[in-house]
Length: 311
Image (cartoon, rainbow, N blue to C red):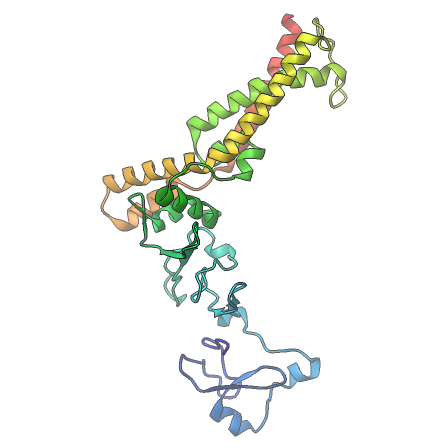
């Protein structure tokens, strides 16, 4: 049966509560208290009938439930994991930051979130109090903030079953800035420098033939066997680094998250302060990514034009 809690009966205008005896119009789906429907004698939501529409909860009444794509169970809209099988449900903008956050005062309900993980066919369900390598999942989720489900699944794998490899598409495609984006400054700077060094010969080869409408005449033979071999080695090296970053980024982030969370919890016992510091320390930094990319481009182009000047 659908969840009508929080919606209003249009006869008595009283909010439906858990346990109320509710009936619905078979044509438009409008819910009524059973006694109210008997009193009205019919469905009085004439506007829906005239337009051929069906009843839906308004946003102020809490919206519709979320049906699990795996088992079909109809969950309350504030649930992030199916209450029946634990499968992650679709996230909304308001709850993406931490799937285990408690609701704010006045919102009602709880985010009784769970993560289901079955690496070897044996189903295991984790909740916010589950401990992974000495850290609660709630702390990891608060640290990650954006895209928590993907990271939590990787963190569970690393902490419970070992291994270091998992795919991170962002780190594979943008290794020069991804680590800075995730506030991994040291790894980010190293990755940026490596990518810049490997990109310079490739850009020299591009500008030699007219890249972006700019053609530069270099004083050395760009088309010769030696430089062509160097450019090929750099291209393969860049691909190797992309693969390395894409496969190890999640593990490096996991180790950093653990170090930061342990340090924060050792420094303070005030739970609210701890959660705020974890959230501030983790998350993402668009300014760092933008500045890093600007520096990357400036470094590569600067070295290319410097080569043209000096040699």
